[in-house]
Length: 329
Length: 298
Image (tube, rainbow over all chains, first blue to last red; front, top):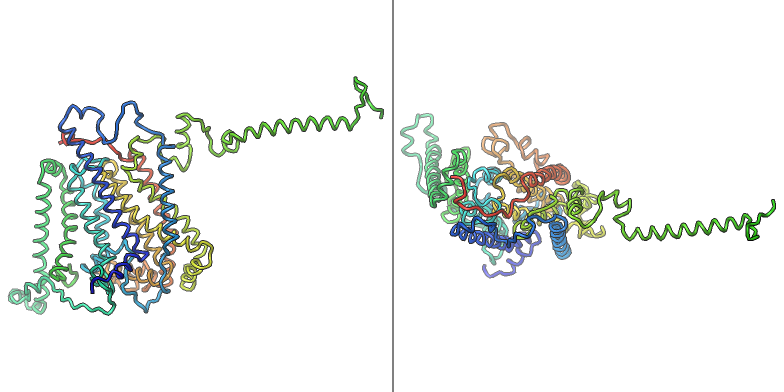
């Protein structure tokens, strides 16, 4: 049932969903603002590159410059009054928000009555959404760990000395795109799917589709090895007699290595192709140590694996790419 | 005792003496009062004021600088800042807003603690009491909740800004890492607070969240290689988080302690390091003069 605008309104107006609704406006705004600053600097950089004479002057920011002005201002009051103003504005926003919308309070906790849908707080819905595509140990433990470690690794991987302390797109294309894909394209999109799309049973409901607690889905998700019809028939002839009963399992586990390796190589080639596209990125790439390069490849290949898996699940209904008795991916 | 006479032949008795003295005393009080009322017009000259603020507030550069440097709360700032760095367009003010929201949360949180018992019997009733009977209790709870959400938003957007302006680059690599940990602590603070009202929303969110801990590799009883290492529902990492095998009274108490004491303390330490490193790494990162490709070392 589409066209149920009331359903959409119920989701949007749920008090705990307000932050993500606000983020729908704030994130595009700040993205635009960042690019606005970036492109202004990029125009200046292009101008300076074209005119070496100008590059020797103080004309190195997009802000107005006057040699008679002092380079530094007193913190009190020139910075502090802005901080005070920001604090007042935030207080007003918070007061208005707190006076108009009540914090949610459901029935008392009851282990025998399951909430449907049972959702995590909005900022963790990306991880909960990940549970749909990965086993819990990946979605709940490995992915968050990799996100945290990966974020902390950024300054040590990024060998590009340009763009330190000023906005620029032209000089940092790869870094900017990597972050946009990771933060907005994956994390925030998954949070939005978890907030707006997932309904009762954590099933997929398009916007304006009515939530139906009685809905039952019959999706047949198949493993990649099933699609390729891996049954271990030929493996039986090679294996020693004691392992023959497990031929199917072993064949699947062995087969699963193939798509993983193929994906890894393909993703690595794709990343390599991107890194080699411009003269400057080749220069930066050459400067990186082996450890930096390897770490960057591992994190980027892993990050790209998430949208690939989501695509395979949603479009081709593939459950596991690699199934073993101990873990499945 | 015979009355004495002065030069004009007037009697000068005890009474007259007293009158004279009280008149003089009145004069002194009057002039002193006038003087001291005059002084009150300049409160910053008073001993009391100077004992608190330590400096004169004269309009000169030295005192302007001292007003920042000699104040415990302001001295996280340098005395002077880069002219362009005070522009909103560079920092978007988000780090400061995040810190301000943390202060708001500590304040409202402490107020809420006066009314809250972390026990299965009382917790939910305390929320009802707060919402319906405590003066401004509902406003207090709403502010705490929405400030928490705002803080998560501000942290994410702050990270976005720092990335987009390349502020994590040398020499600020370490401070970026501290910032990432602070973001994680913010999320954990928010998440541990979710359970405290002891309602269905928090209960199931925490149930879903901690169920994932079951699947931790090596440390969870359903995770890869967990059972092989002897993990059961009664000794794995989820048990440690909840203080039991289900979300119950112990989980409520643990969430409360983490939320109100442990994580705020840890986060405060990291915040101290974060702000200190901002200064030690050379103040805020920009807006720096742009660099050209030709100027980089090959």
